[in-house]
Image (cartoon, rainbow, N blue to C red; front, side):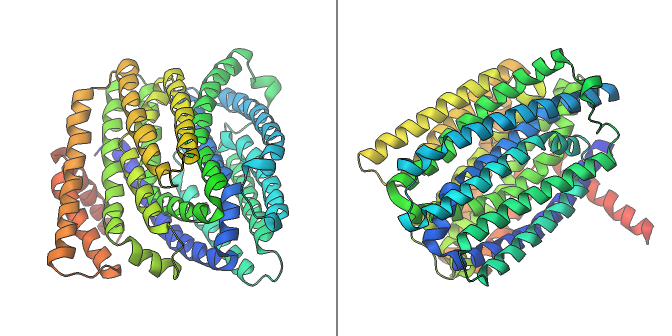
Length: 511
């Protein structure tokens, strides 16, 4: 069996083990925080720290961009180039971090004087949370090169261990907040920022001890030409990130302005559910991304495209395993999770899961464009569509449309239209075969989804299953069986069987 397949499976297993543990801990944490803060304060935090979601997007996108250059150097087997890239990216991200921190400081006044819709008595607490957020943002940005270094080395054991530690710290924070007598909201913001900073410090220490190329000597390794190349790439990537902020998180601020913190509480619950479920797919793509980029770096374009097709299809199918049972049991699961379900939470969570499900068909295409190196066009498209989304929602809210249109517009513009542009640009820049993609990824995946939905509906309608945990588990098992039987190609089933046999043999030999 090819060593690359073995490594992908090993890394994916580590990340999935971490995901299952952190998912359980995160759901307990969210319930405790929601009960401690209440719907209104939870919504206030979500409004101000909607930029926390921006922070996650910023970190992910910039890490991918930096990782691309490091993987390229590894694909070329050039250690000195990797050290040079590492030094140049540190300098670049310090500059970017300062610039974004300054912008956030400038936005402080307009945010708290007309944009945010926050009860007067909670404005002071919200301002303190915003300051915590500025600090976290800067630290996160300057740590991107270290994050990219870990990704480039595919060292996912580190991610698994630290991810579990962070989840435990979040749970401990929730317990502290529940038992805290004073302002719980401010404490929540402080603890969130502290955990983020702690995580980043651990990463920097780990990289310095683990990797030989983690050497910061700017006088020796910083190159103006390489800095310009990285700057152009990072600049266009920032354009794409900015568009994501406008289209996704900017619209969250817009929703708060028109509908208040209660609507944001419901939206945040949907976002948190999708974030946890999405870990199931991002873990697989995180394991695949370095291989995709190294394949392009070594000149193997066809392998890069083949892995992209697999990543798109697997992302969708893995997400489907959770999405189908959740959509049919949303209210029962939210009651089990939260006790008392906030207003709008059920429909908001369902629509967010649907949106994220269809995004899986297109998200890995961005990785192939990053690997190829020409990201100017897709980021211009992202910027335009992000602004269009924001403007459409602004008009709709002004004339009286409800908050639910956030999802309808996002699915139409950010998912469908943007996905079509990604396909066209990937065809032009990478040689992606659109007919093959349409047949093997889009059509086949959606047929499998329809089969899973039909079976789930039949079980609830004709087998007289009551919605709840048991129905969720039964639908999940049947969905997984349908995917394995009809969703995977013959060679993929063969690869899974081969991997299982290899793992079984390895385990048997140890005992």
